[in-house]
Length: 447
Image (tube, rainbow, N blue to C red):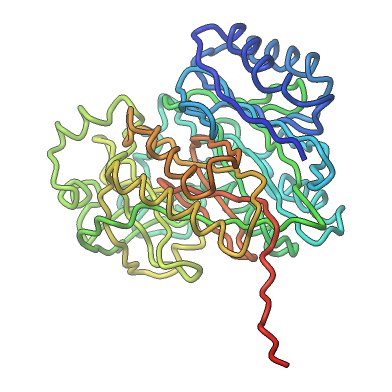
């Protein structure tokens, strides 16, 4: 099996495309069976991405392409980039990669998007199979926080059933022509579990300003679509796993009032959530706004995590805007099942992020030998925290997998996995899967 991977950096999308074709696609002997293509969002224009994809399809000879835009991209043999392109190409019969599927209305009807994944998953009877899909990411309209003010009213706290519905409508409006990524990604995972899908890996396309996101399928560039494929094999096994930086646990707190449908937390520790949140992270309002105001008020350095039935914790990020009494949190609706929910507080660090990437990759290789490749979905917040040290994270993944194992890392706006039918939607985390030969346990026989 031939697998090539590479990353290029350039201010011009035309030059980046030419280089990636020369350095990666031309190294495949013949027409590749499948290409995973990831550009950074700085090229802005949808037409530019359409031209780049058309050129890649023309030169490679295949339209079996999926991908999207991500704030950072990386591969095993190159430095990560925040202005360029990464591509992984596949050719050979050890792994079957199905023709790409896409569903262009996933924000409005995520269940139908999940059906696309399920249908493709059920279409193969090979021993090992794993769904891989990309979605739109978070989006904030300019008046999004003004819409949420209604959730701070006396009536919102008193008539929760009605305002859960209102919160769902606001969530849908904020998601730009459909629901936000937390709600639709969680719905996709839940639907896949109900339909008997065992393993899947997903990530959200995004730019850091949360203004646009593009998804690729063949030569097509979408803005609110789900795109994906299925990896399957009779010879190789697929392991998928996830983790986050749990190294700096500091304190715990309780979500004491919230609206489930909108992920809107009204009170923390029985105080107005906005005020309590700033107390928890021990930062003034002015300093917080200065640090995060230009990044949609996303708390990038601080992470909370709910105790969860599937894992020890499921992490989420919080948005703390000065005009609101509450806090917007990326907590899946299914996790908001009690009236008084315990959460724990973690401080992120560059070193902790690197160690957790190594932990994820190291866990993935357990039970496998002769690894063929790996694909990782890594949070864009972790990219910002790591800064110019992201190459160290890449090196640690390489150390875990082995120097000769090609892999690609996409820095996303939301990471989600289905691991043995356990749905994990999280933030500030790293998810991934690898393909390799299963190890055979042999016993010594004494005659």
